[in-house]
Every structure is written in C-alpha cells, then in structure tokens.
Length: 115
Image 1: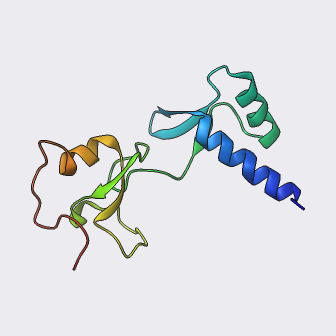
Image 2: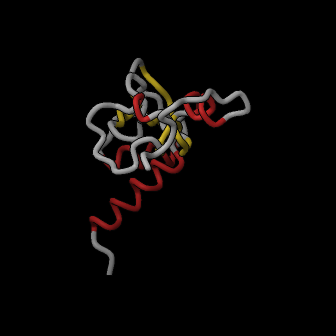
Image 3: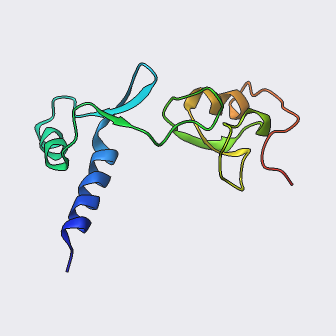
C-alpha cells in the first residue's frame, strides 16, 4: 500500500516532469506557468511558485544553467568538488553540449572520461 511519502514523491516527480524550467538570475527555477493543476501541485507540496531548484545544474565550472543533455566535456572544465567517477562525461546545458558534441565541436586534449 502506498504511503503519504510515496504520494509526495510521485507528485514531486510529476512537477519536475511537467513544470516550466527557467532561470531567475543565477537560480534554476520551476514554475507553474499559470496552469491550475501545476499551481495546485505546488501548493500541495508547500512550494513557492516559482520554486528555486538546487540540483540539475550543468557540470561545467561557472555554469548554473539547467542540464538538459549528457555528453563528453573537458575534465579540466568540471566544477570543483564533483563527487563522480565519470568526470568528463555527464550532465551539460545545451550550450556546453554543443561546444564539444555539436556539428562545430571544439577539440580538447582532456575531453571525456579519464582512461
């Protein structure tokens, strides 16, 4: 039988799936965009609209954009303190993804995971 915590987790998952993603200054935010079902979900979760999100940032140092892609990047450009064995391949914003994986990709000596 699902618990209250299970229902809350499911509602959070749905909000992360369907809410609008934006930036407000250097903060990643989710907002309801005037959709009443999302507004109700935000209220039920006790979240403000917009809601500031601390996770899901691009892994490149100095970039706070939403991660939206997965791909290789130069290991020397990783944010300090990333606790991942796969530094050099991970979550990137669209701009950084296309920098090293797009049609006009830039070469980098330390691109991708360490061997």
